[in-house]
Image (tube, rainbow, N blue to C red; front, side, top):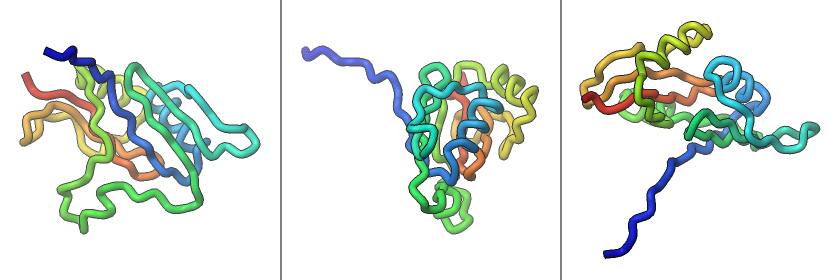
Length: 133
């Protein structure tokens, strides 16, 4: 049998209005760290990371287009990223202590998950959670 190689994660690539503003949100509010940034004089691209979650951020002169703006207000495609966390209750408490506003509070969802949603500075919706045990 062929050896199976583990995949460590996947990283969303978000088009943002302003990379500096996105850095501020992800770092100050969500505890991410800047792993890479383009030239300081022309900050058009950067990468933030927390644990194994990494997000690519790029400003290309167009408006961001989060999923929830494309699903004709049906609410069926609102997440732009699912971020697995083993203990969403602890992370929700941490985020609340940092003044993060939740677009959906911590709860057990109808589709078998436990977690919460937040919208970033550009309107992208991230779900932080895990499958219910």
